[in-house]
Amino acid sequence: MAAFNISSSDPSIFILMGIPGLEAAHVWVSIPFFLCYIVALLGNFTLLFVVGKEQTLHKPMYLLLCMLALIDISTSTSLIPKALCIFWFNLKSITVGGCLTQMFVLHLGTSMHSAVLVTMAFDRYVAICNPLRYTTILTNARIAKLGMICLTRSVLSVVPIPLLLSSHSFCAHRIIPHTYCDHMSVAKILCGDITVNKLYGLVIASVFFGVDLSLIALSYSLIIRAVLRISSKNAHQKALNTCTAHICVMLMSYPVFLFSTLTHRFGLGIAPHVHIILANLYFLLIPMLNPIVYGVKTKELRDKVGKHTCRISLPWATYFKPS
Image (cartoon, rainbow, N blue to C red; front, side, top):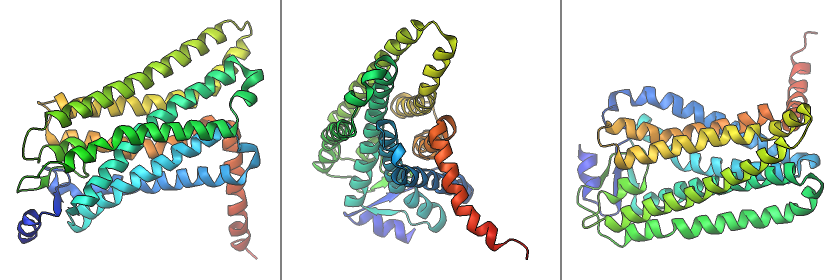
């Protein structure tokens, strides 16, 4: 309790509670957190390494995958190590600057993730609807420009969030009932009216994700129309198979994010620890599953990963070979 009193009275410190109501199970909760984080790092760094090493993978689709991997590494690293410190060592304090920075990185990553998924949908549209012009329309330089547009959009939309929070004074207790600095969790400890904060967060989430989902739906409606015009069933299957991984990632990402956002804002009857677990699922499962899905569903990437895995395992197999 002494640590709480010192920290809560310190104007430069917040207290992250972890998962209120499940304090006794924090050590057990930390196990899936830790395992998901390790798998996410291994998967995403493997993807970056293989794409970087293989010239044949220097294509728009794989460059977009690398963007997704970098986003997943950044968001999970900004959240999970701090959560593990809370679970394992009861290190619950975080500076105001550290809290606002973590919040910025997490919301920037979420916005960027959605923007990259839109760009991937456009990539699949061009690949299926204009295959002969694919290499001229989507050059690597153009993909880099699209990536910069996604980053600029995300930064401009997320920067006001910590600025709005820092313009208010915080209440005395400074205790955040969460594993990380979420926008609304921090806004609730502001002294004063937080209507602007609530409205801005809701409008940004609604507008940007509404626009992103609409653009993805448009891309796939055009893709389906183009596929239905093809007479060959084998061509149907081949065309749709190129979209399978992207569809799987979208089905994992958007429902979890939207359900978490809606329950956090409107699910008054849901227990706080359920809110927090749902919020963490997005940053736990998505970074872990993205490289696995693309590794399994994309044959070219799967073959290259297998080739490099064999190269790494061969020296060890030789070393341990019985004499």
